[in-house]
Amino acid sequence: MSLFSRSRPHDEELPMSTTAIEPSQLTGTYAIDAAHSTLGFVARHAMVTKVRGTFNDFAGTFTADADDPSNATAEVTIEATSIDTRNADRDSHLKSNDFFAMDEYPQLTFRSTKVEPKSASEFHVTGDLTIRGVTKEVAFDLDYTGAVTDPWGNLRVGFEGRTEVNRKEWGLNWNTPLDTGGVLVSEKVTLEFEISATKNS
Image 1 (cartoon, rainbow, N blue to C red):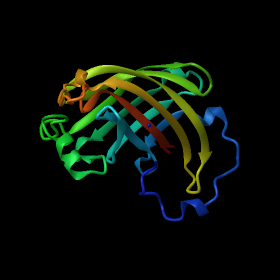
Image 2: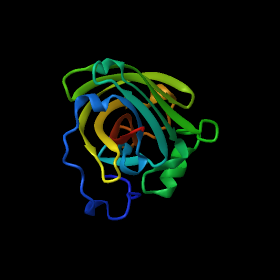
Image 3: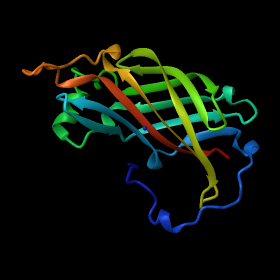
């Protein structure tokens, strides 16, 4: 899966349409609205607490098929240098060769390979996640949180999900042992995302 602060001024003062969205209207191609979406991660630090971060610069599209949701596809490109953990020194370390090696691998990408409907609002998504030039398959459950016509006339939909991965599978191997046992940074990382997207005209 907090929302970014780049929202339009006074969004809260503009009413959303109360007209019901017909399922057939959902079929089409959508662009992710990065200003109202979050791509984040959580890793355990020093075995006792969690550090959260986000990628602030990303773009993506997906297609939806109301008649056959398994036809859905999705692609996301993330600018690695936009990593933000609210600590400049930590961000610099994450950008280095110890972790993302961003000078050589400036982008992370995800491309879906399979979408399996579990219910009208739940989907199991499988796809290829590429980090540091290494592509590994990941899978996660995705919850559809609804659709609305926003104040600017856009058909807007929402999704949220999360999954756990082992960062070492993508070559993010750096760590430091603790005197009391364990390591400074967990190998397991939780990826979290909240997606708002608008349908292309």
